[in-house]
Length: 270
Image 1 (tube, helix red, strand yellow):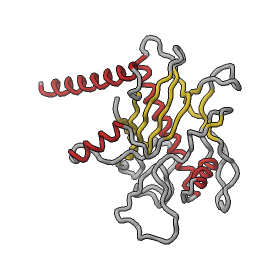
Image 2: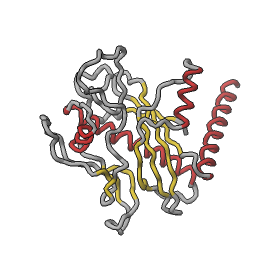
Image 3: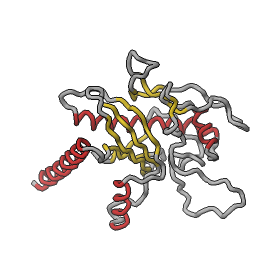
Image 4: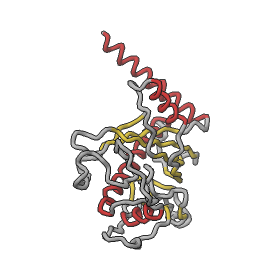
């Protein structure tokens, strides 16, 4: 399993003009700054936002399992942003409001996304918000696909679509594996990257067949842009090592990866 590179699909709306060189729009929370020289100190307190998801996932509205974000325009907002919300492909458990069965998680609208940025004091060009929402949603879908792969491998004989019970954003909190990767990059810079993930999520996944809840850790990394200058991301999705079952999953996956690499090398030498 391990890290998976995720490239924006061909059907994705084009990035805003002026961003063809692969640099993110100013204030985009899904990227790190690529400037090689830090700007001169300014008396104004405004700073570039940290690279992280702006949505406060820890503050969930129990009625819809989503953060409570206003759809009203922000003060001094000059561009009208869409308020339509898009349903994801990610199932969520049933609730007292939906006793008939589980629904799907719903993504914030561009207006809600922008309001979250404003609330955190991040300067973001309003014309780039819709592109940022597309990237945000795309990365969540890719992360869920990786979760499903783990779950399918673990429950081969009785697989049932898992559900995302809840999630927590942990920007700036490095996972143990991310720390190991960064240390390896410091020791062996020619083989490993020392770049830290730009965001981290912890997802609690519920297995409907047993009711068991499993915590997954997702580290989000920036990868080199593709030849057309479109952003590419690398997601490291895996069960957290906090239960015997998850430890078995991780060890089994690591063993399978090593055996596959060994066989590939052996076959190549023949």
